[in-house]
Length: 284
Length: 317
Image: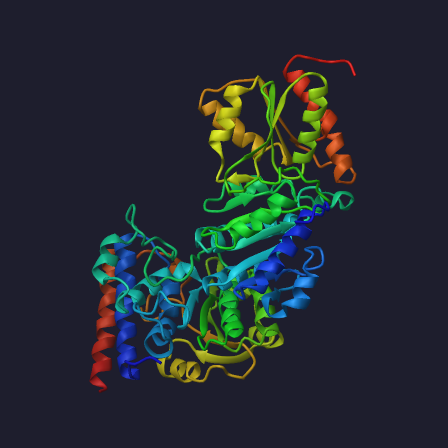
């Protein structure tokens, strides 16, 4: 369905570009969820550039793929990808982020082109995705629904209510991806309110579960190319990621949950990303 | 049109079933509530148009939002007491803020569950929803208003909350009455006192008008079936052409119809003897709906007495 699929090398380069945009808009806007956006952006990259059929041209229609970002606080990752996909200009995003009267606010809203649902309160996105997937089944439509959940948000009971419904209605057109970066604002998820054994829990709730390195582009492509994992079951991709991925001093550091980089930190981060790009281009 | 007095939620279910036969995009979503919602027949006749999510009101509202996003005409049906508090954040974010035109249907509303106690009473829903932007609020008084409201919301462009009770409701309207969302209906005319009523207490306001007429007092009764959009013109007109004003609702005295009227009039500089009749700031006494209504003066006698007090026309009975 997606016509201009990027190859793995192009996708890796694209992730670097998205990370640069994330850091620049958080630095410019003086606020944002830095580490969580960096942990999930490879997933968004593969979804938008390889898996999903969502374009500015078909966005106003129902019979195309749908994406609900339940972890709305990682909006900077979404804005970065949507700008690249042509929903709005990167320059507009950089100019307007977190400015008065702008629609580029700290959690996604439908006022921003390309955003399907207003999220930010956690534990909401999965139910909405279930509703969209159920409508496709009722109408015999082929579209699929993808939703990204944070791991911390799994403490919200509504996610489990929605999971039961997804399995009950055999929604194999629903793909739930969990950004399992193991950190939330207070600390390790396992210390705050233990989630494990997470794969077993999702399996018990009726999902076909797969684990993947959620920062490995080729692994994400392979996993998401094979949905539904099992016919008749909703797919759940447990994506092990690293919060702050791509910037050495932010990786797996609790403090970067919503810390804004200083000028020097931004320069250092962008230098790391430039070096990563140069190294990647060497490998061609 | 049958003139048998039925519960409003039965009329809701009958009307919706009729409409849904002709429109397969109409969907009902229930939280183990099809029995109390009188939707068993709907489920039997149109099994493809009813979605069950189990006893999970938050999920009910989120799923309804997703179905609406796909173009479905969704009625999310659940007891008002659970729907409007348990799932309030979903109503705010997934329906109102995300602007998905879900029709939220609170059944067995207000004091319908009477003896089941305060966990099952919804005396907060007007207040909770009035301060959330982008959701209309309709509480029909009788079977006519119920039928017309259900028909009117099928293609309603905004989120809307409909509130229905489970007791038989007497007919209040003239045969040629028309119905429009947001337009109050004058049931009785009069200029000594006006009672503005919403929902099931409206029949009691009409009965109070009869009692007052026997005393030589003319009482206007306005059915304010829609709380948002609010018919401000009807309220202002009532205040300008009556000697006293009463509001009555099956709701806390806080945050409902009465405070909406008070807020409007005070900010317009309109002052007159005025009383908000509803449930005071307490968990109610035990009783069926009518017992609780009677206890708190939501009755023909109680409302007539309130009118006489406001008019300083105490009449020994």
